[in-house]
Image (cartoon, rainbow, N blue to C red; front, side):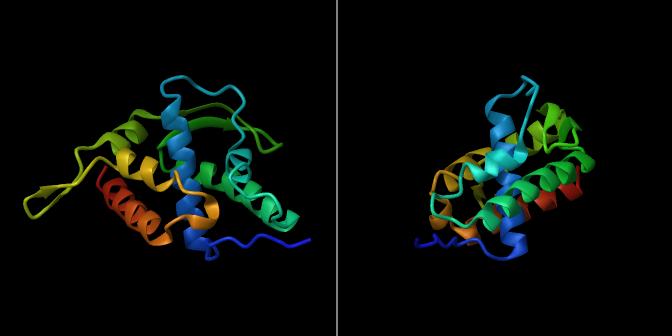
Length: 148
């Protein structure tokens, strides 16, 4: 059996993907809280068939821990369970505002809101994800997080 390789290999690239994917998923159902949200499942559903079980396990753990990081930073709400599920997961007002900010200006050009860039970047198959684009979006989010 041939194993599928992923384009996302560094820890920071994996975190960028996970954070943006989870924020995008919660944004898509905002303001409804998800009673049984499985952040690891959100990520493993993107992993192509034929990928090793170690990668599935890694992405499952990554999803859960990334959610906890986003929660600690104040961008999402939810009550972690011991089985990788989060009850009542939802974007906070701070998370929503972060994704819908007008966007920064670069010279005379107004950038699109983060949510538009994020949704577009995440449409690619996981093996085709543009790591540089995810990194740029995440850097922009981190700058905006630092000042919120």
